Length: 96
Image 1 (cartoon, rainbow, N blue to C red):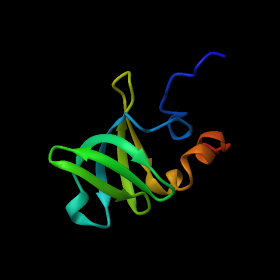
Image 2: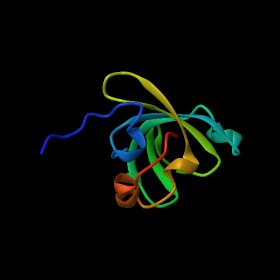
Image 3: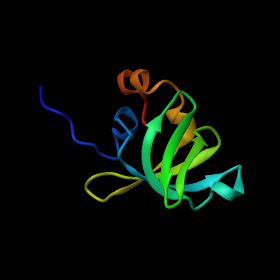
């Protein structure tokens, strides 16, 4: 089986752990601008390793900017990421 590389089009169906992420927009203004690496993911949250520890960020009401391995930045509405990671990876998604 050949592993599919991460592209802007298929990012939401891939594993997010290990990707660099920045929070562009959030209903919680203290989260805007946070940058780090995704270290864990649950149904409704992403855990991000930031400069001084870890932050758990709810996916809903947040706009994330992920940096994929080739350096491309991809903006993703957190609502698209809601769900168990293992289910999201299998889910068929319309163009988001």
